[in-house]
Image 1 (cartoon, rainbow, N blue to C red):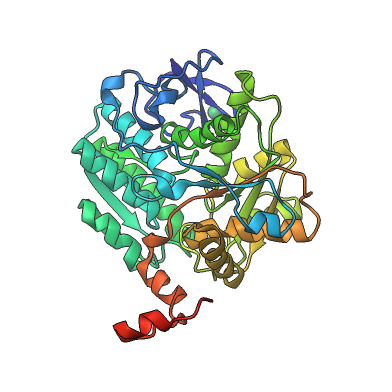
Image 2: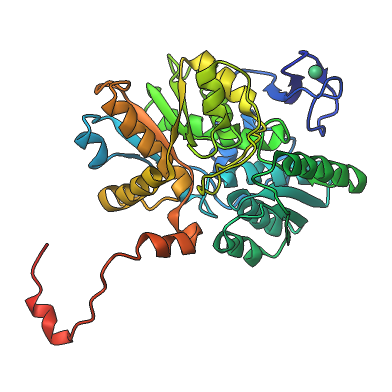
Length: 405
Ligand SMILES: [Zn+2]
């Protein structure tokens, strides 16, 4: 069984449906009666870890086969920079193409468990697609409020699952609009008894438990070894914080002997967490955002303080990457590794390369980069990425005369 403990005041919360501490608004941590990890391979997707997920009865499970994504050794890029033990966790292999499916599976399952009939959320694309897909499978209504500048091509995937989608003015670059959106969705959900599913530990601690299964899988895929360093793209911060929680739980269960260092990677044009980390101060909301790396551009990251704490606890660090370097990294992952990822995922390769070149990463370290989503998501960006590639028109008879590269 699971229970909720406030990370601020330490009180246990009896109402399992609340999103934050009823006494002081603190972030709730989902905890479990035992540190044990009985795996349940008969359950689908990430639910083989059901003993460590907020589930009361397996009949509520909504799964599309999420999780169990490949952990791939780098074929060329790692060896080329003197980092032979570099691995990529390919989260683009999830059912809708991103790690958010892990969170949506737990969130929609949790919604059914509570007997709610609809979900409401904000998203720049990936979480919306995941919630819409899992919501469709569960036959519940969904209301999605997207960022003003969310790529239309990403929204197209969401619309295919047919939830109600509305774009909110200034959401995504104006902290006042962001905070008002979250507050009003919470009020709407309270009034209608819907479930608010925002992919942040400070808003949806129960659903976010799904993301920590990435850490379990990485540890299992490395045969019980923990990596030395794990690189995570960071927007709101919930993914990094959840993965760190997963590694700590896995170690408490005696399955790994030590913990990795965590690295938060942000886009340079929108990096409130990196700025706070480097200045040694709390996270302050930014007034504007000049990065276009969809998925990790939040001016007011809901789990920012959790990330700072996790970086300190794990002896990790934060770094930011300019957008043009990110696009270059995206192209390199595709052409040297066969991994076509979205720009938000490519930041990790850019950061790993920079940290290896500066000597921060040692050549004998085992490094894992979390590639959060697949490259097909934003078809307009795909078009742009390949605009300068030539596509000659030839006669069939010329095929015999082409020369190898
Ligand atoms: Zn509290």
